[in-house]
Length: 87
Image 1 (cartoon, rainbow, N blue to C red):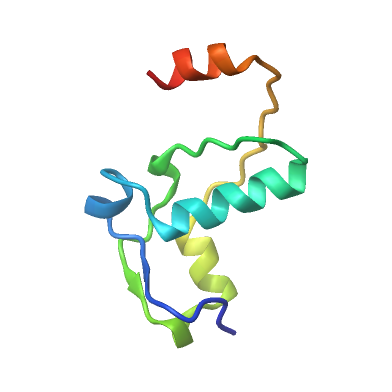
Image 2 (image 1 turned 180 degrees about the vertical axis):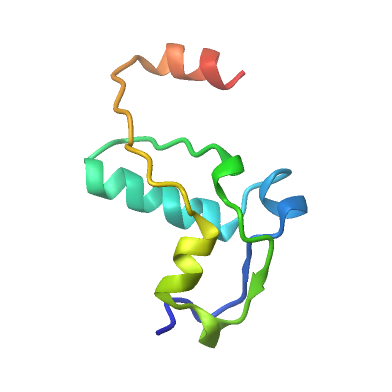
């Protein structure tokens, strides 16, 4: 089963240092599933340290990428507080 038509970089040097496609994809899922305006992901939850080819994505790969079964916490705050948190 493959989900993307491009390589997915989950290398630690990438996900810990900059915005990545995998981080954006997971945050988009979090936002849509929870009907939220913003989602923030701790990149430390992304654990596979692999570059996936488009044809290689499986359910097992998803478990390797994010092995932790954590709940998503919802917080309501103003934009000013969000900016303060991010800074």
